[in-house]
Image 1 (cartoon, rainbow, N blue to C red):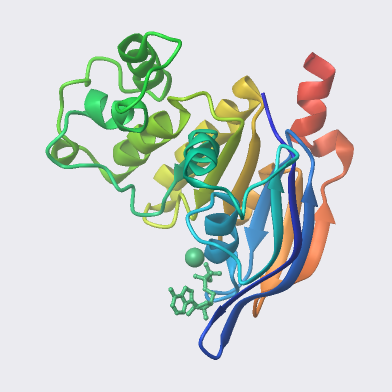
Image 2: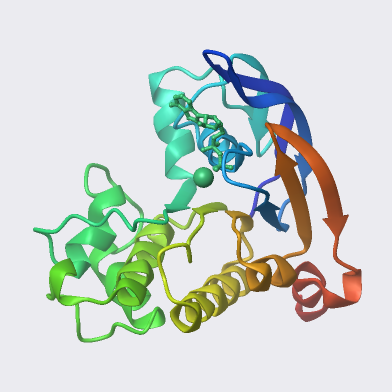
Length: 236
Ligand SMILES: Nc1ncnc2c1ncn2[C@@H]1O[C@H](COP(=O)(O)OP(=O)(O)O)[C@@H](O)[C@H]1O
Ligand SMILES: [Mg+2]
């Protein structure tokens, strides 16, 4: 399950800084897009706006054909449920077990699946079977990011946003996380937006959008034969 994302004339301003400056972008359902560019280019701001953790000062954002920058409380809740987010700094809750951390996004609501069984499955899928009761403090950075990826997937999100998911990891561990994200995406087929400085991540995506000073300055589509989207198409 995946959704298309459309960003139209979006600006986000902080005082004198144009974090985003009239950005237009269309992402197809199921596409994996890497956002690259120097620190301060606006990558995080763009991901936050698509996930509606922040709102634009100008322009519109549509996800799955629905406008999301003017939602009321209930619409916002519904949209946020459809988005999985992976952060550079993991953001796990230190007093909760790994299993409970994975469950956090679905704790306050009714869901149509066995949430504990799914959390166990996801922990196993990210290589942490048997560690359900461990606490985050017992884990390495790479393992913490694995838990965060499992948490991002708990509600079957059609859209996965990852903000420098390998930024706090050494290159070997980072590569493992890259491989995990890509296999997860291949398995679930969601749309994926990744802000990254990691060329391996970018190379594995279907498309690389380059940003600078709040604007898109480059947009390269990987040749179809190399794209993950194409592999899914051929499998499906
Ligand atoms: N909450 C904020 N307050 C003030 N300035 C901000 C805020 N968020 C982002 N910015 C500024 O907006 C620009 C883009 O930031 P960001 O989206 O974090 O870039 P990136 O993720 O590409 O490093 C930077 O100049 C940053 O300092
Ligand atoms: Mg950033």
